[in-house]
Amino acid sequence: MISPFNDEYFMKQALMEAQKAFEKDEVPVGAVVVANQQVIARSHNLTELLTDVTAHAEIQAITAASEYIGAKYLSGCTLYVTLEPCPMCAGALYWSQIDKIVFGARDEKRGAGRLKDSLYHPKTVVMNGILESECSSLMKDFFATKR
Image (tube, rainbow, N blue to C red):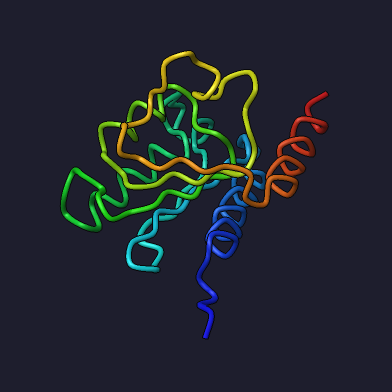
């Protein structure tokens, strides 16, 4: 039997978090951290609410997952995030030593992937494009309301 818990399933969980951010008038980025096919942390952008430029979904997820497992390293974990991590978040993910990062939409302007030298840990697997159109649409819808 095929497990219902796959990359699309977990990205949909991250999209639900992004929708929460959208409803709070935050840039709609959502993230979940998964270990052993179980979501151990959920988060979304909280920069406006917390008046904190570092309160990105990924940073919130790293903190919650570390608290959940009681360790600073997230080995054995996967981060699902709706938007490509920025350099700040990629750096934090590097230090967390997370096994895998899966993101939906690319961030052509601020994504870590645009940098010549990768900020991701060399042992971290990075995948993209999972539910890309859904992730991208939510961002476009959000910014359309700002113009």
